[in-house]
Amino acid sequence: IDLSTLPDDQRDAIVALVREVAALRETTQRQEHLIAELDHALYGKKSEKLSEDDRQLAFEDLEVAIAEGEEKKKQAAPTDDKPKRKKIAKRNRGNLPEGLPRIEQVIEPDSLDCPCGCGLMHRIGEDRNERLDIIPAQLRVIVTVRPKYACRICTDGVTQAPTPPWLIEGGLPTEGAIAHVLVSKYADHLPLYRLSQILARSGIDIHRSTLADWVGVAAFHLRPVVDRLAEHLKTSTKLFMDETTAPVLDPGRGKTKTGFLWALARDDRSWGGDDPPGVVYFYAPGRHGENAETFLTGFNGILQIDGYPGYNRLTKPSRTGGDPIVVAYCWAHARRKLKEVFDRDGS
Image (tube, rainbow, N blue to C red; front, side, top):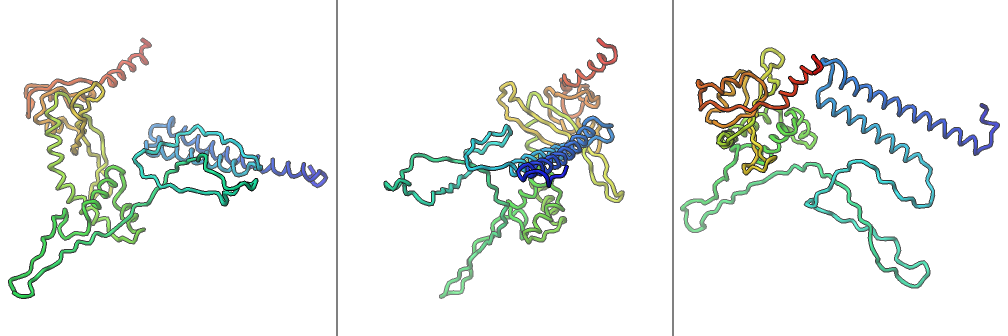
């Protein structure tokens, strides 16, 4: 089509449509690629499936692409002087807790003079909008000053307040800094070398090995708390236990080996129990039943488990560390076996 023969308004409309079609085609291709990756991750070969974290990242990429396309469409839409009622998007924006501090920014009109010239306008209401603001973590230095005092008349000595107890005597971190490292590593799964890089952006040069020393010291001092929690849980009448694999560094081999984390938990909230929920984790290099027997020393109640036969030794009179316990098997695992029979026999 020779656009030069068309009127200006028609030519501009065609050019705008061509650009819009090209933009939509690009967005569609990108979304189709992301959907194909998700489909492959969810339904592809078992060895090629993504982990849960990778799947979440893929979903995030898809949501980012959709949001980018919506914003591009909104910015490209023609505007006019007539105010339009905004359509509320059906998405989960999250909620802002009442306990968060509110900083109000009042925006007044440039002029309060009435257009008709009869005086100043009076305030009749207001519109309020709340947005979430994030202040990056702030680093600070705690300076502990211990003044020295002496008598000007006699020479009997100098008095000074003693140094307060610190978790790492003479060390650099405060207890709050150590707690931040622990939460970052174990709750947020942030490797220490990445945390070292994050601190470096603020001008703090702390090597990963130093952070590892802090974690080791904290682990030593927290061990009595973990032991006491385990003792408290094992006084319950019923508990839940399960184990899962965990990659563990194997120095000298250049790769990791498989270890096991054992979770011992109590949660009676679903039926209105009085005991508060709690969980404690144990580590063992293997999945042998002897490990469960060791971890459950002193427990004599009901243990809810899956179908792993390693727990069977806990039900025998020869059990060490307590009386034979009663096991309650998980119904979800039992259903799997029934489903296997149904899929095989059709009944």
